[in-house]
Length: 258
Image (cartoon, rainbow, N blue to C red):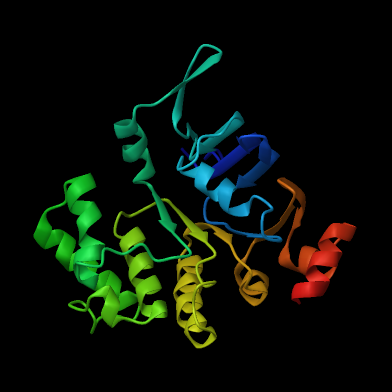
C-alpha cells in the first residue's frame, strides 16, 4: 500500500463512552495520520484519558467506531453488526499499541531490563537472549544504559518513566499513547522524559499524547486538540490553536495555563 493510500493510524468516528449516567465521551471524532504527533489538552475530567484508553480497548466504547491502522479496535464487523473480539485477540492487536501511563506501572520485583523484556517474551514469543539485547539497547537509548540491573525502588520517577517508555517500545509498536506521562514527576525530572519523546517524534513514531506540557505541544505536535466536556472543542496546528484559538472555551483554558 503506498503512503498516499495508507489508512489513518487512528480514526475515531463519533465515539461515545459512558460510566453509568455520566457520558464521558460525547461523539469524539479524530484522525491521526501515520507519523503524526497529536497532543490532546484540556481541563481535568474532559475525557482525554478515557479517550486514550478507548484507543487500545482498555475501555469499551458504547457507540461510534474506532480503528487503528485500518483495523477496528476490539471488534470485528460482520455485515452491519460489530462483534466484540475475544480477550486473546484483543491482546494480540493491543501488542501493536504502546501505552505509557501517568503512573509507571512497573513490576517492583523485576529489574529495569526484566521489565522491558517481559512482554516481548511472553506476548510475542521473542527469545530471551534477543529480548535482552533489544531491551538493553532501548534502555541505553533512553539514557539508562547504566541502570539495567536496578529495581524500580532504586530509580527516580523520571528514570522509572523512561523505563516504562522503553518497555512500550520493546513491543515495536506502530502507535504510542502517552497519558500525562510527566504529571506525576518532580519538575526537574520532566525534561529527561520529554527529551525521549521528542526523539521518538523526530524518528517518525505516531504518537497520541494527553499532556499539560504546553511547551512540548507547541514544539513537537503536528496537531493540538482541545477537549472539554467530553467533546473536541477545536483542533489545529500549535500555531493556530495555542496562539490564536477560535473558541471562547479554548481561550479561557489557555489563559489559565500559558
